Length: 228
Image 1 (cartoon, helix red, strand yellow):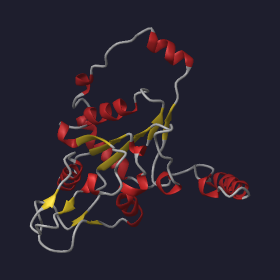
Image 2 (cartoon, rainbow, N blue to C red):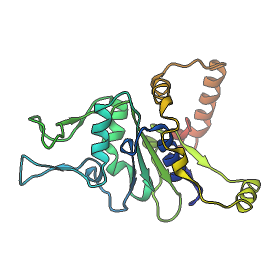
Image 3 (cartoon, rainbow, N blue to C red):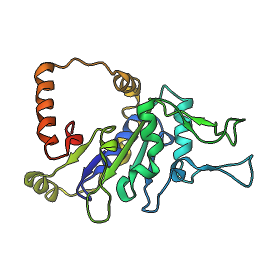
């Protein structure tokens, strides 16, 4: 989750990285989240109730991107959700949050034959990376601990010196110069992303400090935010 002031370059950064490391544009999609998203259909579509032999895919390419990621495990894919918190994330993203924890598949429809190339169960593969960009203002919704617990959050802050440097050197960013320049690093990127083992120094001191935070936060009933 990339959060910060509007116009600080969150979406552009996600797009730039995807263009840099991907072989072509079919490996990423930038999807504007609508304030009216109240269920999973804008991302995963739905089976046609009037025609059992038809599955209605979303027009934004989200489902096709996930299916493509499943078919090409050696390549990274990026689902970029722009303005992710214009709607309540827990409503339209609930299935994703669940499988992040359970490591199971998303049930799209009752077991049976594949419909329109869409299987009854959808796997969220490890080579699919979901990036959300968010602003925090009166038009957006706050995140619950359930969402934050499954995300890496990066906050964009701009210093006065950085603002001065930008104002003194305003120019268009040439995104085309980045295309496929890092594609040769895709394999290493996936290997690093898939490596869940790491060595932490001073783990005992870190655990002790986290428990102290938990104890203090519990006094005011906000211990759920202790890990953040």
